[in-house]
Length: 131
Image: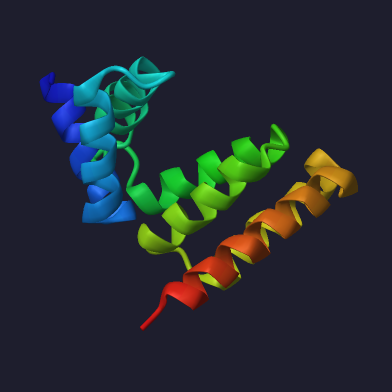
């Protein structure tokens, strides 16, 4: 795998843990599953080239920006993933709630309702996984 893939996988590992990172590595190295290139490119570009630019924008702030974008896109699964990623990157639930409140006037109530449901699902999963 490329250097960008390895850098991206390290960021992914720090956020989602060893088990998911190693599963993703195996999936991309095997290279036979449907969409395996998309997983590889996700590690190289967003994770390897963008999320590693911490000197320009710390992960916590990048999480805020990205979460706002995926809320605007009304992408339930991405909102859920980026809520978890935001927590891993140092955001508090109160800060995440403020992102939700900011979505109300700028994205609209229906989109914000989708975001609220996804964020609450993410919190529930995090709470259930906590020791």
